[in-house]
Image (cartoon, rainbow, N blue to C red; front, side, top):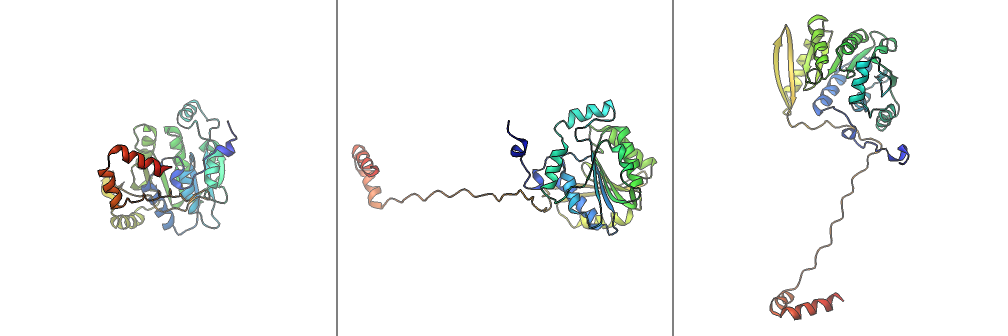
Length: 290
């Protein structure tokens, strides 16, 4: 097998990066990040191959820091987490993440290779404006990640929780809704797979979000009330991914050359072919071919 440096397939566009990051969430991430006026750092817990991290990095402003934490195939903190990692993320390596990220950006974020439990010791409290949690799906770990996000976020910061209602991640669902009911987490909106929330006042951002979404024809929208919380539900309707800068490895596709036009036979030739005996026609064709 050849050197991995030569066999690795670099992404040309964001859609080429492996991962689960639908167009609706790409649009919502960008909207929340661009709406925020106060400076603050960015944090992602669980990066996989870097698809969402690449988009987050696009919204990093001067003076802000971006931190990414993932096991990247390293040693998990406990047996259950080790089994989860082996089953779902066996192909994940830090090298693959960094190659993908550097295909779109000039410099890497701060990368923490380890369990998310170490993040509070690496990221100062009250410094982040946006936190994306997409790491372990086990209840105990998600519970801890939510608690860490609360300490790390600015008062009106946004936390995004992935897989909060997938049938294969009940631990995430329990931890997320427990945080809503008992830990003062306040939902802003729900997509098919992510919950967007804050520990600040959700009403101003919800009103702006609703106004924006009502102008779009590619987003289905409904509003419900539950346990004293207004839940803005969104779903994609034939949505295209929002524009995103191409990677430095993008190659413009080359159109296949058109075949030369077939020569048209003159009316006299067509009549001759129709009227002459087949044996004479074949003889004429052989002479012309030679």
